[in-house]
Length: 410
Image 1 (cartoon, helix red, strand yellow):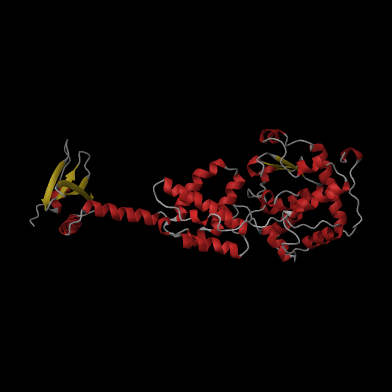
Image 2 (cartoon, helix red, strand yellow):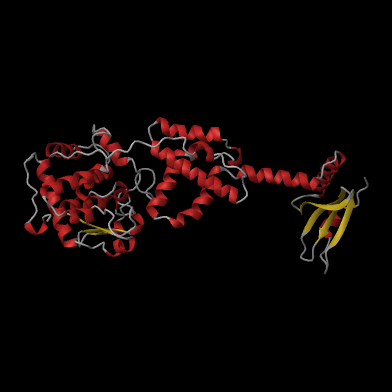
């Protein structure tokens, strides 16, 4: 096959007002554009039609490499294959292998998270990072089978995380439906897993309600030998009785030390309404000490590995287990039940307690405007509760937390 081009001729080729072609032989030519770029092309016939194949840009692809690519294409033609179709198949394979479950899931999450509160979005991403990504995150999404996906779900079921498993099936379904909608897949291997995990038996969060047990728990917390950050979280949990997720996501910008008030933005609340937490003298003292250690960062309770994220959702529960309390005895969420039960038994106004617990009442619009409701009464309630906990910690199991007449339940 005669060759006409040389490296010198290619280097000296100048751009003109129109694209020009320098032919080498066997259908290979160099196209010089008016801008000066030089592109290797191959002209050939397949199925009775003239076609062209791009072989790369000079000088990235040298003359010798362009000739090798031409010869490879000619071999495919000799075997009845279209080089353009073969090239597209290879490119599609490269793209498919780069589109891992993690890549597609992150793309889906980026579009989906805008519909969620920040706390819900954080929870979804955290659960995917803990339960799904370590096992199939780096696998090409089109290669993952239903059986492989089911093995990941079974890991959660075997450790007793039934509700987590059910939710991850839902999220995988959403990710696969997104992959189908964007042309990556035609089938959804997660669809057949719907209903494969039975509903978890509904249980109330375990909690200690009796005065003697509460006193013992508080003394155990004081003797906790873990990190200072976790110890502060344990101490604040009974004093604030917010949801565990709200506590661990506390940011210093939300705390007003002068007004003794913690303002939790709606984006972090389950009911998506701003929530005010009056801080007792005891809670303020803990936060002031904690601020000395973590005040330089955004989160009051930063994670152990990175300070840019808050501590793990399991931290408080794990600390309770280290103190010897089983999941059937006490949970981080149980501090809410503990406060509600005891305050209600002592006669505090249940409306005041409900608002402080951020229980959903009324429409979303009404909740958005009612976040300061009963705030003066709640300040009194929170300080009385903190003082009562001090007495229980000191062993006074007969301590009284009866509210003033104006604060009693009608």
